[in-house]
Image (cartoon, rainbow, N blue to C red):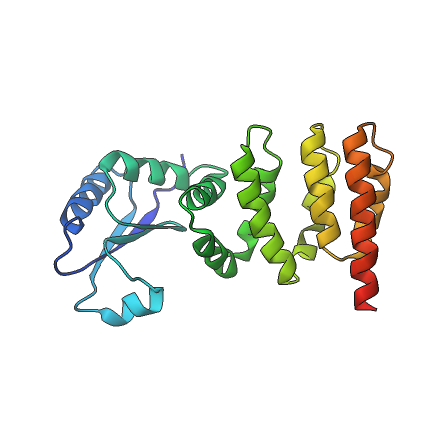
Length: 217
C-alpha cells in the first residue's frame, strides 16, 4: 500500500469554503488516508502565502499536487488516491490543462523537472484526446524554446517506434525541436516507416532539424 500523503492547507479570514475543506481533511486524517495535516492561517503567517505564491484560499498541497478553492470530500479522497498511483502526476497535468492552467503546469515543471517524463507518458497514451495532445504539445514546445527538450531524447526516440503511427509522427515532430544531432538517427529510421504519414513527417522533421542545427553553427 502506498504511504499516506502529507497535506498542507492554507486558510484565511472571510473564506466561505475553508471550514468545509478543513473538516473534510480532518475526516480523512482520522481515516488514515493522510499522514500529516498542517494548517496555516495566512493572516497570522502571511510570509508563507507569499513564499508559496498563494493568492486565494483555501489552498492545499497534497503530496506534489497544488489545489485551490472548494473541494468535496470525494474530490479530496480522489486526489489522495492519485498521489499513490504510478502516473498520478500525469493525471494532475491533465487536470491543469483541462482547466486552462498551462502556466501552473510550467511552474510545476520548473520546480520538479523530473516530472516532465509524465508528459511523454501522456504523449504515448493511445486513449489521449486531441485536446490533451494539443495541450501536452504546447508544454513540450515551451520546453523546446527553453532549450530543455534535448534532455528528453530517450523517451522521444522510444515513442518514435510506437505501434500507433499518430504517436510516432508526434514524436518525430518533437525530436526535430530538440535541435540535437542525436535526433537524426531516429528521424532517418522513420523516413523508411511503413506508414506514409510518418514518412512525410520524418522528412519535414529532418529539414527542420537541419535548419535548427545550421542556425546554431
